[in-house]
Length: 245
Image (cartoon, rainbow, N blue to C red):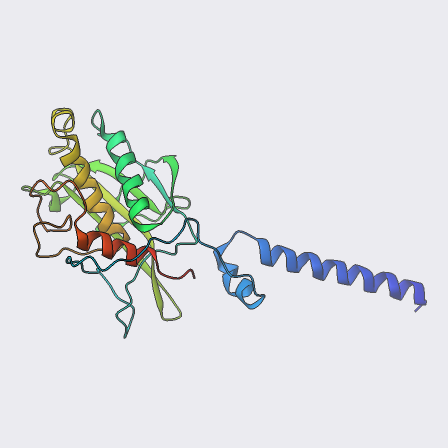
C-alpha cells in the first residue's frame, strides 16, 4: 500500500472514531448515561437541590431502595415532562394545575416541563400511562371511569418505577382529578383548598406516602390544609436531593 494512502485512511478512521465519541457523549438519550459517566461527564441537576431541614414533622416515602432506607424518587437531572388531558376540565382547572406543579417543583428542586396537551388518560386499565414525551399525565375523570374516585375521594396520584441494575427510580406518573369535586363553583369559592388537593396528589407522584398527622398535607383526608406541613417539606426536600443517575 502506498504510504500516502495509508496516512489518509488513518486520518479518516481517527475522524470517524472522534465523531462517534462525540455523538455518544453528547447525545441526549439517557440510555448512554453509563458511557458518559465512564468518560467523566457526570450529569448535572436541572435546578438547585433544596435544603433538607429537620423540621420535626411527619413524612413517609412510598418506596425505598432495596435493602436501604434511601427513598425512591425521580432523577433530578432529567425534567419531569408533563402533559394535561383537558377532557372534562372545569373552568379554572388549568390554573390550579399550573400553580400546584410550580409548588411541587419549588419544594423538590425537580424541573417540571410542560409539553402541552395530550389525549392519553392518566391511568389506563389500572396502570399508569407511558407516553413517548409525557413522563407525567394529568387529567380529569369521575367514578364511572375510575372506581377509586367513588365517595369523597377527590383525586388519585402515583408513579411507576424502573429498576436500573438494582437502583429503582420513578420514570412516569399519573394524576386524575374528580370532576364531581372540582367544579367551576368549588374552584372559584375555595381555590386554595382545591389547589391543595392537586398538590397532595403530585406529592404522591414524586414519592411521598400518607401520614397519620392531620397538620401535614399528606394526611389521608383533607382537613382544609392549604400549606405544606413541616414533615411534607422535609420529605419533599429529601426526595428532591437524591443524586443524579
